[in-house]
Length: 414
Image (cartoon, rainbow, N blue to C red; front, top):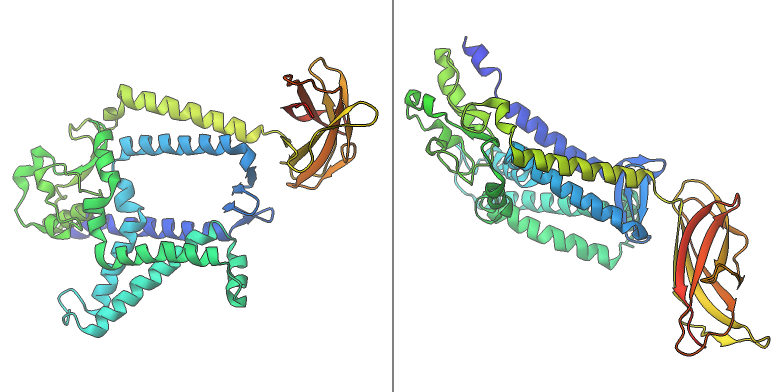
C-alpha cells in the first residue's frame, strides 16, 4: 500500500518538465527549417525568422498582433492555471533548484554540510557565473546564429555590440543567482502580484481543503518543503508558486498509513472541479484570444508576396528637363517575401489614372527569394506649380500582370 501511495509524486514530473523547457529554449536557436533559424531576430536584415516564415520590419503589424496574442494567451493561461508557470517552467525557479542542488552536492548545506568553507563558496560562485554566461550566450543566439557566434568568437572577431550584450545579460544574471534567487520570486517578481488580480473562483490553486484540515497532524513537513517559506495551511498566499513540493511532502507523511495526502491541486477551493472554469470573464477572454489568434494566423498565411516603400531622394532634387517635363527622383525599396524568384516591373500613374513615365531600372526587376532591393528612379510629369502637391501612385506588377504591391507619394514643385 505504501508503494501505491508514493509512486505518483510530482517531483519527477516537475523536474522533467523543467528540463524539457530548458532544453527547448537552448535548442531553438540551433534548429533550422529550409536553411533558416526556427526562431531568431536578425538585426542585420531587420527581420524575424519564425517557424519557417520570415517577417520583415515592414510587416511589423504582424509582430504587434503576435505580441498582443501572446499577452492574451498569458492572461488566459494565468486565469486558468494560476502560477503553475512559476513552479514548473520559470527559468528563475529552475536555476534556484539547480543552485540549491549544487550546494547540497558540495556540502554547503544539508545534514552532511561541513560549513561554508571558502573553497566551496568560491566553487558555488563559479557555478553561478557559468550559468550566467550560458544564459547570456543563449539569449544572444536568438539574435546571432550560434554557428556565426562560434566562428566569430574563435577568430576573435566577435563585434563589440555582442560583447556588450553578453556583459549586460551575464552580470545581472550572476548577481541574481548568487545573491537573490528565491527572494526574486518572493519580493520582486511582478508576475505574482499581477496574478493575484487575475485569480478568480475557478483558477487552479494548491491548497489544503477545509474539510481535510482536521486530519492535519501538525508535522510541518509541508512548511519545511516549501521553497518560498510559506505555510500552505493558512490558505492561499501570493508567494505560492504552485510547485507541488508541499503536496509531495504531505503525501509522504500519510503514505506509511496507506492514506492520501491532504494537500491537492483543484480549480478553485469550492470543490466544483472543472465546472469552476465556467464563468463569464474566462469565456470572454477565451473568445477574444481565439479571435485574435485566428486573425494572426490568417495574416501570417496570406501575406503579400512583395512589399514596396517610397521616399523622395535626398541626394537628387526635382528639376525641369530641357523638354519642359519635371523629373522627380525617388528611392524605391522593394522586398520579396516569398521563397521563389520573382520577376516584376514598376509602373506609375497620376491621380487621374494617366500613366507616368519612369526612368531608371524599372522594367526588368528580378528578385531572389527573400531579397530586398533599393532602386533609384525618376518620374517624368507635368511641372508642379507652387502650392500644389499632386499624388503619384506606384505599382509593382509581376511578369504575368498581377499587382504585387502599391505605394504612393506626393510630387513637389522643383
